[in-house]
Image (tube, rainbow over all chains, first blue to last red; front, side):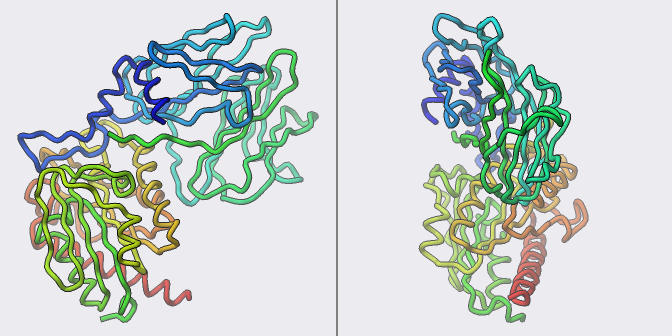
Length: 233
Length: 219
């Protein structure tokens, strides 16, 4: 966490310093205390959906994102809403800029992909969820495969629809019961579903499923339980 | 008296509503003790749910009370926080009661910080769940509007709704059901007068007895 927060602090150009002060209490009135972070909180993470390792670079830190199932998607880190975050993502000699400002309660995933000509590019997946529920599981399907016109998340051998109609560059989300069921992603009725291995769904947890296809490669799935770093002063 | 709590060890943790002598550390503690529970109460003023998991300094006082002894109020400068793991290990409770909401509801902010609140709650309930203990979460009372705490009835309602869907596996006690908005007077918009803490403590205790009775019946 410390490594990533340092990076974000650098990216935010001091934006996190404001968050770090949330616990302070006015010396003039000791009984007054804050009720939550004064400016709210946004959450930012990075996802490497290329076939190569990429590096997120800020003025003072570098974070490598390997192209592995467990390393592609970072956990969310809390950031100060309203502060512009700047940086670059690099792969070999190629780079792409990162520039994003979050709003309160917003979750943003900076997705890194390769275009067909190999150029590095970033896209922002933005969401302000309101489905927090400790008795259910929340699953999001992110379609980052340009060749997948209609992504669907299905459950079980009967391919029961869970999330459907997700266009390229878009996402869908649904609350489901916390069950142990085989999930898969399909792009149309005709294509063979690809397994999305989340394991047994746990109550109260949130999950992400990405479908993506690096240039000249078949579609792939990365599926994970979302994690967030705690906001501590 | 209802026998549902007789002999049970109850651990109560909470925020500033537990940190002064006439607050819940007296009224709720006494009400549960009258039900023959052995009660251990802890309050940390100005703290969030996660502060019972991640060590911090307490900004505006803390208090504790054990069984039939009186409350011990600590107003020293920034004493260390208590850890839920350590308190559970020390007292080996049969039931954990969490009283918390006002310190997290984002009073004065345009939007309730629901993602952050959910994370704070899950941090604490996850620890309680890991000990396999039943728990009850008590939401905030209405309070009064127009104070320097910027508490509003609308936000209390919003916070209570968010808590109701976020505190599982804990049971939720909605404190707004005990009174009408503004019915219980406050000293500063947020903290109740003695009569309010008396009514709130009795209301919470009655709800806990009801929850415990239902749990016993299921077993």
